[in-house]
Length: 230
Image 1 (cartoon, rainbow, N blue to C red):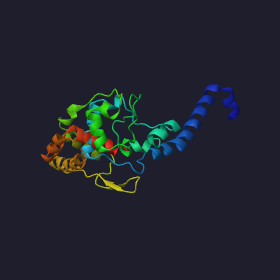
Image 2: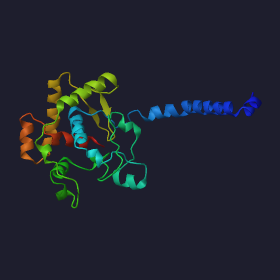
Image 3: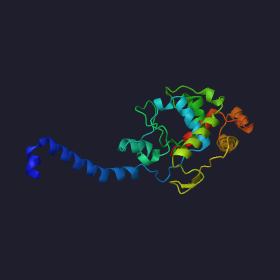
Image 4: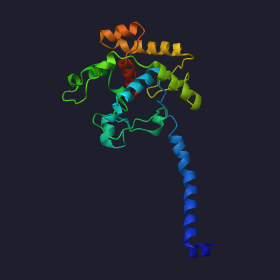
């Protein structure tokens, strides 16, 4: 058999390819599947956080900010632990990015606060002198799209194994339970309760008044999303 293969290089090459492919299936795919599963500290986004993520994408924040810490000391010293594939289990789409005009935001929730984000989005240069980031004042008056965020929750709950309404352990030892409402009104109510928690730490009185009236400005949803990135 082996002598025959030596005389027929094409079939020898096919045999080698099949052997390597089989080994890859046995060794690589199971490890890849395991690595892509949610890791501890990875929880699905709440309705408000999803709405904020939509604001983030709509305003092309991912064009200047990546969300991928690479396994290099220069990056982990600045941004924290390098990113793991399982941390993106609930991201659709991924926001890895290909350039960094601004800093990586993968773990921004660990070192920035609500009031910092509020000031930064309103007047970036007052927080980071020399920053080329524009102000996003319209986020303080535009209303967050809770309907679309809830529709996304319904879609992923139907087609993917997303642990809504379950306790998810976080890295700091706490537990996060993302409640998915059973109706659109319920989704608005849950999002509003989260928005009130964010608004407490904000200074803009118009934003506070809007939340008190039952409205959710985009800036509140965006900050909720940024605070969830840890």
